[in-house]
Length: 341
Image 1 (cartoon, rainbow, N blue to C red):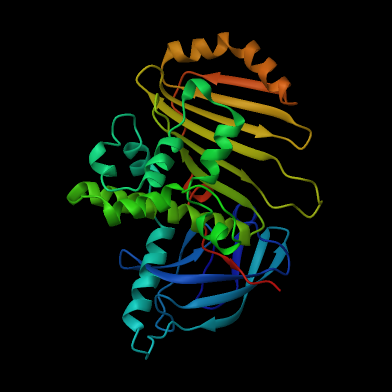
Image 2 (cartoon, rainbow, N blue to C red):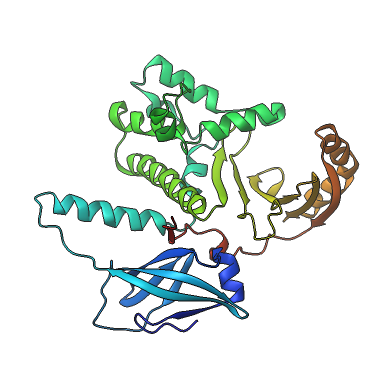
């Protein structure tokens, strides 16, 4: 990509596809300081930005998208300067803006939450002072791996903390979610030091994922990360996503990623691609050879179980290896605000 102050920006076909740019779309890029360098934040991408005194961190530039044979061209429409507020609450606004950017760029989201909800980690000291409803909610959040079901996954999704504000706004009555519970722990529990820091980190992790989901929604995509805790196993990280509907109007595939790690099976990653016709392609990575062999032996049982839910196993690949690192462009929170009207 070539970036020249407020000149048009040429975006390669690959990056345009990853960002989800479409012809005549209006998107917003934000200039931010990163390690002494200026960057342009554009939907999961930190682009190099030529140093120019005309711009400073926090400035926003609106672009009109024009698709080309090579990708896309971003034509600048307007510039919104970042100006310090003259009101008395400007320090608050500054803190909120700083927190927003911090949440957007959180690395390795989910790590603290997974550690906190390992069996035996949620100690009595964390729940002292909780009311009976909150204590019951915590117990209900901890599922059993041996009794896993679609309903249990749905319950974990709804209790993930991703939708708390939405449910409040729409007056939907739902059980206490993880983020609400963490806030209660901070208020009533006798936690301090590293324990308090862990709870605050969990809240940050969840809110980072909320922002990521919102950014995906603005690009007409779906992306939800959440964690499912168990009483008899380590938590499982779950991410499911769907790209925007293309110009051909064909329904895109769903992609579901799971990551589990236990003493008995080691680290295991599973990627499932579900087509609109309910065909499913699965790739499993297992660090331990015995785990990979057990998965191969269970392939026929898996195929039958999927058929019971109306899914056809079109392909299954089992690899005795760690999953290759996923490019941050596919997993980091987005930075484009789609303001198309």
